[in-house]
Image 1 (tube, rainbow, N blue to C red):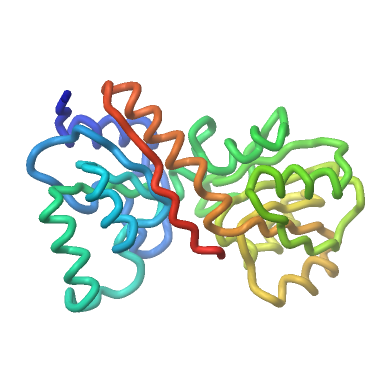
Image 2 (image 1 turned 90 degrees about the vertical axis):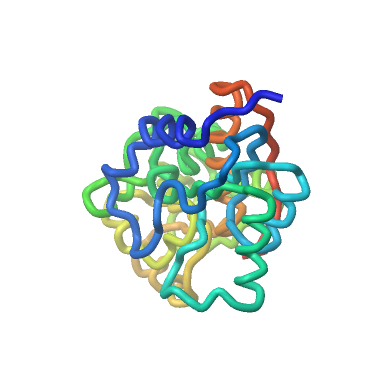
Length: 253
């Protein structure tokens, strides 16, 4: 089985995704989070780096796991209990972890928002939802009944989205920013869309959607962010002639 140097994959990802051009959220460390010793033979993709997905990656014989949500969110905690078990599993499996957050959301061909838009058959995409000076989503001008958009989302994501029907019954400008962007509903409305698709948001956005006159679809944080890691790892597998698979571990959120 072919073995590829880990550093060559990391360098390729950096050139492809340009993480240095983004200001991400605090402690969302983009790039290589855990190294390994013996290069890469098999890659797995997963949305989240967790004990459950790392165990499954180890069982699959993976030497690299590429994720959207990495190991470092929030303050450091002692490596005891389940956290220690996670560390031991990584070391024993010689499993590297590579994480990419906002740069993967924003990518025009491999990104979560662009791929979700493509699967929804939205065309002529334009940048949308600026964060720290960089757009991390995409928007499209259409004429699409809100009910049809709901049906497309339900079929694509495997579950009916939550709809906050504050806007028109015919969607004419749809903006997408995957994940947990619901709390930034005001920003979406200020950028001129009448329909906003994201993963999740807080309760108070229901009233805010009515006040702003905007439809909001919450498709699930996890469900809207499976696209990017799959596309990225598939592209890496082709580039380096490696095998790959996707580890599906839904959060239900």
